[in-house]
Length: 582
Image (cartoon, rainbow, N blue to C red):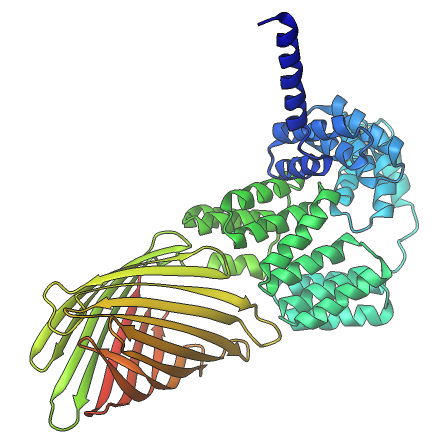
């Protein structure tokens, strides 16, 4: 190949390479870099942010993020350079000032660190990371002061100072409210915060605390108004924005919570509360690795963060490590003694992974047709926090004939709002039950609980039953909603069935469930739907009801009664069952 052709080809390849390398925009590189830093992938973050700055050197946001990435890697000099350049571009960039204060503190210069940190705290009173750094700086200065020869005279002068002024009543009320809320006495805490707001209506700390207390009591609308009132007084206040995130989490709106926290994290890279909330949301999303990383990052930013420790315990519990979870909870409780949330976590018994279900039904047929029986034994195992596998054997008798059916099933929760299942069953020597069956279904939480209503679930069940001479497919979409904080559940199911020929049938089933007491649940319903009987679709009308009673935490008994009308006969169905968890 002539040299000029080779040179031209090399130039073309170089151009293609440069074009591909620039395919990622500054925003894409920046976003990826921020995510990598939040996941504690600091080397990757530094590389991505450096590439972003190569395309846009005056990007102050990328400079600050690079500074924190280098700070996380212990590279103080490049971190200082990044923060300093960011401040030259944006003199009021408080995160850059905070980063420089952190560097001076780590370098053993508490006086310089103090001069940098104090303006940050004044400008961002809700920045807990800056406040924590300022407190550490002052402790370091005090330690240095205590080592000086004049410490005795200084102490004597301090003793001779006039007594402090009478404490601010709002401050005293805030402290009282915090203790009440931590101990779980939410209604009392709410009253105390309202009293503080009567004295200082524009106190944003009191408004945020009130919103958190209201949200903890599921007063979601009131909590939202409290946070909005804060933002009207102080737009962008971090504590109120994080309160909005917590509100979305409490309401079960994980998608909204994720959107809100992703908007906050780039502007609060060292905020331990934001990182802990990121972990909480990731845990709800089922991303245990991200949740673990976020909680650990929050703990690294603030080693006394009880919420982050409790979050680590939650991740361990979700992964099946109950003993590891309890160890984290005990550490968290030592940091926040008397916390009801943490005490409740510790009080939970070890998870019961196994469940045994035994049930039997006896049907009395009219017209002297005798009785049918249908009994089953099932065992289920919770393999992970989101996966359950189960097996069931069924023994049914009709007109002197007996069939045995074996079924296997797996249930998988993909997120807090979506789950699905699949099953397969077979009757080796079938007389009237299906020779084999396959089925699948899914459930989606369309609406989260809000002000006593919800959740609202949309579900679908599908099944194919193969008999000796025909196959029947059943499709059954249904919805289920709850009222009065979950005490009343209402469901409506449509049943559509058809066989391999031309036979089709439609019907419906309505049901209501009511929690009469914390341990006793009642249900009642009516159905006008096809029943599959020995390969045929039989129209039926059924009225049914029953109850369940949690005799112990791990033992439930059930009883039911139904009256079914068919074209050929009626039958009365008596059912009894027991569930044991271990």
